[in-house]
Length: 128
Figure 1: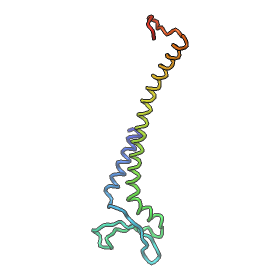
Figure 2: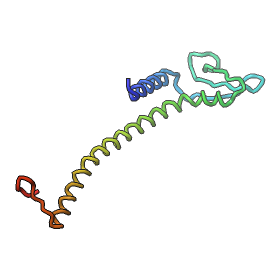
Figure 3: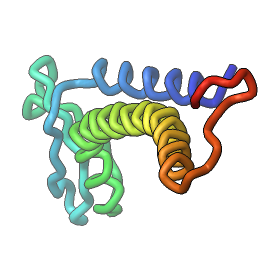
Figure 4: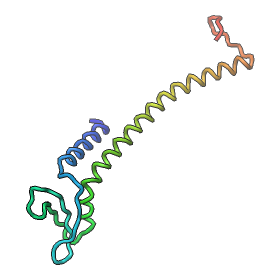
């Protein structure tokens, strides 16, 4: 398996998990007596305020990360797709440029040789 295939498989798995998750956006709010933070995931099937909650204790940064992951991950996947497509366009342009460049350089060398009075006849006697 190539690195590209590994990356493609990994990204496909991440995208599948993101698409299977409860729709966002998710949010964070304080709960409990000690100001603990909870990442809240909207879900109309739940009775408790219409959300699933994932307790993060007092770690606000973790709760915030989890809450934002629902919208951040799909956005990052879309941006990566765009960047990979653009990289492929540049890769193709470089190949085309490389081929064209060498042909143009050879034409320029032939033209300069002709202008400088160089013998431009080929071994079979025809003009180059």
